Image (tube, rainbow, N blue to C red):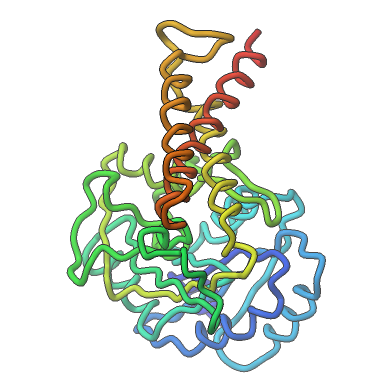
Length: 314
């Protein structure tokens, strides 16, 4: 077998943790993809405690596109994704999605077209949120779907030039040369197991924008994101924003100016104002109250994060 046959230019990859039941549908959808270039499927198992390893072995033995899987023993989404980058480094093009998603027909071809034919270094597409029948709460309006990873910037492709039109690792394609200089997902923004938050993909996206990389949105790159029931609770959205604020406070908040206990005074003022709004909206519809509470939780997280940073620096 030639080296070209054993090392396809295209790698399709995902990280997985304790979602063995979802893997057959994901692999079936990937193997059903049609592309004008051969590609390999890579799975990075992050120490799953269910029967993920057994399921992956069984799926690897089935006919169709090759499935290769490895285990990343350091727990956390960032070590798993960085292991994925290492394993895919010999490929030229890398398409990533998550283990709770299913790609629509044409997903691989659209991603390859964006990278190879349009010359983009990073391309992202639509992420459509899918709820199990009867599972979507009444209070969960469309304006909150972005916090469940939904992405939809319209029906037309365009170049991404700033952070106002983000694309996430839930549906993204990279030229692997982006990572030749050692660029990796930032371990400070990792999450472990079913923890919430993280933000490593936000940081990666913002870094690529700041570097002026050729980036674009492709509406024909579509994946369906299956939302698990534990995320469909108000406390999930509050924890998500608190954790995001916590990391922003620890790593990305300016602490110049007047402070109290190491925290800028403006953060206390923001928290007080937002807390008042939460109370004021308590009797209104659930979605409006929740949105106010999420903002308040984020600011509280920033205050705690700045305090932790001040304690670490003292």
